[in-house]
Length: 275
Image (cartoon, rainbow, N blue to C red; front, side):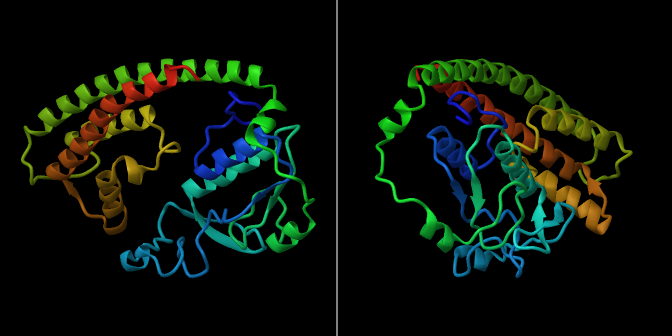
């Protein structure tokens, strides 16, 4: 989807992105964004009050991954690198020629360039009243034969790439295993700094992991939370790691790669099936 089924354009990073591409493919015009804050609120939260996250105190609006951007209603707001990447995706998609009008009815949040802010109630009042069309009628207006062909091509290409990724995961997992064996030669409690051989060994392997699975596709906190915690401790407190902490990071990476080896073949099979 995205300007025609089968042409994904930039890789969607959220459900909102996929919904936008579906709406655009179906010929919706205008498309109104709602709830796309992509930033922390004034109180530092990024969730509604009265939810389970209140008890978890998950505000986290400070740190190296937080930056300030223009606000949708003026001024500046605080956001994260991941949310900012989501905002940029919208800007790039909206800028594509031949697209629909896109309006931002979010009450606050980060500004999405090319998407003017509007009041949701006002938009609903002025939108033309049209009888609803069934989904198959919408698809019929979008050349379904060509769309099916292009979707099939995109799925086969994605299946081939996914199969290749399985091999990459396996090779890197073997390298992680070798690194873990090498770390076993050092005292587990021995402190290490960035210049230590154990540190350099671990860093080299993790760099390869990031190259294989870019962190703009999945945030580090999802890929390997132990590594994130270690880096934050080093940056905030200047504390040295030890061999045991490095081994824990590598073990976590090994588990991630093993899981990928298990589910990637299934994904490749799904993608390679009939559309």
